[in-house]
Each structure stands twice: as C-alpha cells, then as structure tokens.
Length: 476
Image 1 (tube, helix red, strand yellow):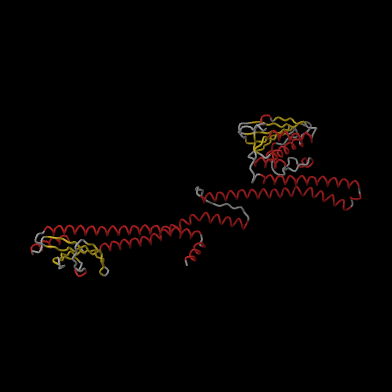
Image 2 (tube, rainbow, N blue to C red):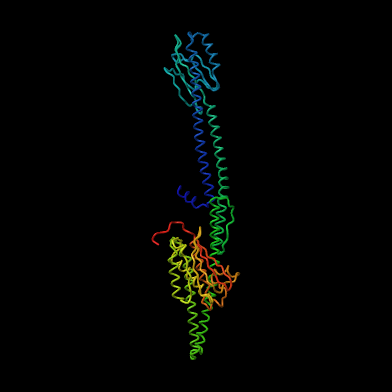
C-alpha cells in the first residue's frame, strides 16, 4: 500500500508534488510542535496541581498539629471553619482519626463516597479515576497530642482536563487550518516556481516540433530559474546563428560548386557530341576541365580546412609558442615558391615573446595572408612581414603594395566566399575562403584580424594576439 502511494506520488506532476510535499512538511512540523507544546503544558498543569495540593496539605497539617485538644467539640468546630476557608471548588477535605473514622468532611462537588477513607503512616499522593473524572488524592498523617490522625485531600482535575481538552481542540483546529493554509500556500508557491519551467518546456516543445528558435519570456530576478531561462535563450541565440551560418554556408558552397561543375559538364558534353574529333576543341576542353577540377579540389580543401578550424579548439588546450621560428619558416617557403618576390621580414621585437596558438595554425594563417599579398600584388613585388610588441598584445603585420581594396568592401572581405572582384578573383584562383579560415583560427585563440587598405596603394593585414607576460624561455 505504501509502495503504491509512493509510486503515485512520483508520477504526479511537479506542481502537485511541491504542493503535497510542502503541506506535509509544514503539517509535520506543526504536529510535532503542537504535540510538544501539549505535553509540556499538560505536565506543567499537573505539576502545578500537585504543588498546590501539597502546599494545602502542609498548611492543614501545621494547623492540626498546633491543636492540643483536637477532639473537643469546640476545636472540631474551629477546625471545620478553618478548613472551609481553605477548601476550593471541586475539592474534598477529610480528617480521619487513627481508626480511619471521618471526623470532619468538607466537600465541594466531590462526593465523599468516590474515595474510601484510608489511614497512612507517611504522606502519599496518587491519581485515581472515578468514571470519567480524574482525581488527585493526597493523604498525610499528623499528630496532635494526644490525637493522631490523617488528612485526606481529594481534588477533581476536571478544570485541568477541561483546559487540556480546550488546548487539544485548539491545536486540532489550528492543525486543520495549517493543512489548508499550507496546501494553498504550497500550491501558490508551486505555481510560481513551475510557471517559468512550464514556459521553458512549452518553448522547447515548440522548438522540437516546428524547428523554430523561440525564446523564453521571463523576469530576470537573479534566481536559478532565471539563470536557466537565460542559458536557454543564449543557447537558442547560438543555435539560430549556427543555423543561419550553416544555411549560408550550404547556399554559398552550392553556388560555388555549381559553376565549375557546369563548366566541366559543358565541355564534356561538347566532347561527347562532336568535339572529340577536333584536336583543338579537345585540347581546349580538357584544359578547361582540368582547370575547373583543380579549382574544385582547392575549394573542397578550403571547405574542409574551415570546418576543421571550427572544431580544432573545442576539446584541446591552446599551446604557447614563440612565433619567430614559425614566421621565418613560412617566409622561406614562399621565397622558394616565388623567387621573383622580395620579402622584407623584421620580427626581432617578438622573437622571445610567447603567444597562444597551434604552430600549424599560425603557419596556416600566415600562408593565407602572404599568399593573398602575392596574388594581388602588381608591379612592385614586395611583401613586408613585421612583428611589433605592445603592452597588451603581439602584432604581426603583412603588407603588400598591390591593387588594394575599396573602403566599402573592407568590412566584408573576411566573410565566407566573399570576393571584391569576382571575375578577377576567379582568374587568380580565389574562392573567398582563405581569410575566413584565418579569421576563424584567430578567434579561437582570442585573437583578432583586421585589414587596412587603399586602392592602388596596397593592403596591410594585422594579426593581433594577446600578449603572454611570462619570462622568455632559454630554449629559444
């Protein structure tokens, strides 16, 4: 039975779990507090009753022991008057001789036959029941020469029982009220707590069904639920940006791939129809197909490099390197490939300064930038590579003296597949992905890249790396 109830509770909605849970906890706390209060009050009242009856017994014993002739009619009358003044509501006072015969009996709403007379040798206190009434009986011996006897005080605890019953009833009523109030309060609290969670669940359900990146509406009060909603909205922002980038990437890639494929298909169709019998057309078509296939190869390679750049730093720590050796190695490679170019290199300022980047990725960034500088140079075939040390960063600058870039085009040159002059870029083999790859690699190491250019004057590409202030290694 208990197991079934627990299973039903676990299967309840969270709102009712919180409501029942808070109600149960509050009622349990109230129950224990009220129980302890009832017990303490009951003990206190009983102790007070015992204290009062013992005090009364001491007073009566003292009075009786002072009498030297307790059996004389006059003394019995005086004792009766004295005891009448001491007697209270719901109380019986009785004086017994040594044989147990009652000499004086005074009663207020306590019949004498409820308690049988009994002679004792020492004081005795007991509780007895008579029907529904609880009686507190105290018997105490006394001696008054030449008389010996026993004093009996019987007190009906009806008033104490009524007080306890009233206290118990009050606690029960308060307990029922606490259940109702705690249930109502728990429901209101649960509704307030569950409201943002329900909003989040509804939004996630809409996202899962429609695929739209919805946002959760919430009040930013700094609590955990607000933080959860903030994290969800930020995640949706990133997802939406990722979806847009992915769609743009697919559209751009399909557009870029369609042209060389169409050219190759056109030349192959031409050869299939009649061009294969014409040596001149055959050579032209094969040359065009080869050129476009090479462009496809480069394009696919750049796409893979861009995708790899986006994943490379997700699970790896960024190493710290000295950039001088990478710059020297990269420039030497280009000197061999382009002997007609002059490379002016100066990186003495940053030779012994570490930066955070994978050496292969630094070489890749430099290769992209230097290759662009070579590709778009004009008569003056000079490429400058400089390293500058600043307080907060290490700066590598690659400068050419070529065609330059129009000012309105500069903000877009780092975008995927963007080309300033598409026709001219095709002739030079550009796909518009190189600088996008360089930008992505720089972003992952908390670096930045920007360009400064003037038309027919040349272009400078600035690579900014956060500076490492550690002492240089002697291994350089």
